[in-house]
View 1 (cartoon, rainbow, N blue to C red):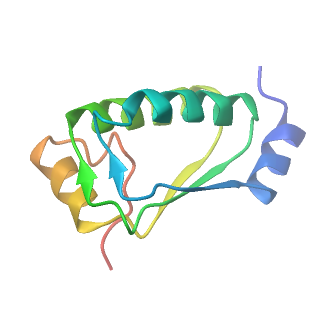
View 2: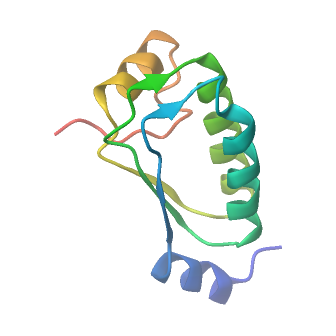
View 3: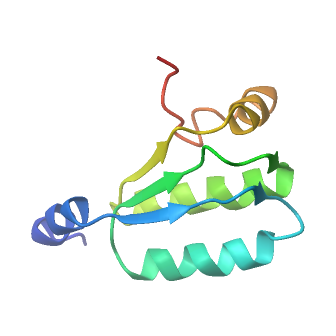
Length: 105
């Protein structure tokens, strides 16, 4: 069960993750390990994703699983300026909602 005090604290002190240039098959295992470690911290997460140039189906899979696992734990995940590559991949695979991408303003 999620403690309300823990949830409030995690929202105040989020972990910011720089996604770099690639979330694809070449780095997906490292991403999986990194994301599991982040989940164990029990904190909200901000994904800085404006520099992502490579995002394939392996990357989509690991990110969707991470967001689902975070949601189950009551943790917030927010994208900060997701790149056009991320948006295009999510749209083509109909995973925009599963990835919880923000609307384009």
